[in-house]
Length: 136
Image (cartoon, rainbow, N blue to C red; front, side):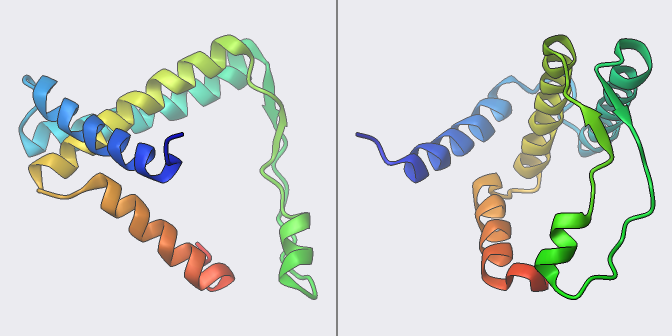
């Protein structure tokens, strides 16, 4: 039986390595950061189209109520404002756009000699250690 933590670390490192092998046209740091912006916009656009064209989800935004006695109470009352679930088609589009974003995020890590797996683990350890004190 394989260790899931080891598997995810290997997948992350292998993914980052694979990105370095296939990224040719957009290898410049300027290309990479603008591609990240482009795919961020594409993610936002796909989400908007899920609402306005497909209709599988809707957004019912209201003021968040943070005035609660405890963190647990506040956590249970805040809302993501999404009504419904992404249909299979919209989910596929979102997966593709987020996948492309992650591709360019790995490319950014490569050109800056950063380890994506280390970054994810570090952020995870910070939020795990600080708990509610790491609120963003």
